Amino acid sequence: MMRDALLADLSAIDGLELICCHDRRLPAPPVKYPIMLDVRDDVWQVWSDAIEQSDAVWMIAPETSGVLLRLTELAAAKRKLLLGCQPSAVKLASSKYETCRALQRAGISAIPTYTAREWMAAEWQDEASGRWVVKPDDGVSCDDAACFDRVGDVIDWLKQGRESTHIVQPYRHGVAGSLSLLCRDGQAWLLSCNRQKVVMESGRFVYRGGIINGLSEYWEPFDRLARQIAGALPDLAGYVGVDVVVVVDDNPARIEVLEINPRLTTSYAGLGKATGRNPAELVLAMFGVPRQDRRPFKLPPISRNIIEITL
Image (cartoon, one colour):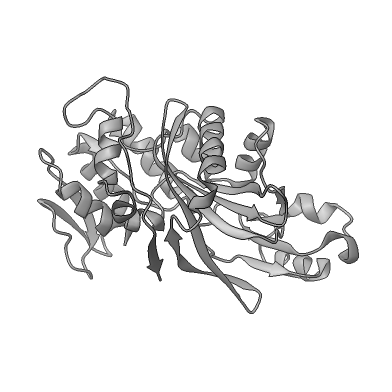
């Protein structure tokens, strides 16, 4: 979904020739230079060759197991224009634990995050501690994310091979939301305020999509948060997604950061209709592509249409 949305947006821009890798078991993407990947291929060599042929690189990859970071470092080593975050930002944002620490140091409200071993070393009491969320430190979406009411259940779950890979966060009662923004050189431009459709099934979180601008009533505090995050993490660049929880019981509502996604998110697929703009064109303009325009980027007027994405 994200890849196809990005390719459609890039294809609508004059002066670009697109290279895109694809699994041979799936239809080739509609680009000038599709590169087919077979199960027998050395995928990293294929990706390296594809990057070598490019002038600029836009990664679509998960943070899991360091895949996004390795690809980003590969493009940076080849001195290609990265249409996304610098390796340092990808490395930081690939860890929910380190992201939380960086945000808290900057005075930004983030949900407390513990490594599994750190959490297990503490003496929590069921009655006082409430519910807990457990997820991979470098995970994406709701993969292997679970919620527990009892401390003992958290410990049992972690001891099933998750002690070195997972983090623990207190569960927050609120609205799951996200920010879609553009970042560069410590600045941020908010594109949409989204409501996420996350449901709980048998104690496991399941992501069902989202409503782009479903939380537009929080535009001003979301915009302030976006600017604070960009100022604290100036190597964030290109399109960035930020997952938050809006604690609506507080007055005013309190916004806490869950994690930062240094890449495209599902919300990108509806962003063109939501903003009335081509988001890929905005990103390229921010990087001065294809005309090498060095003037400071200024976000043009955008719409705040509500667009629903269902998975």
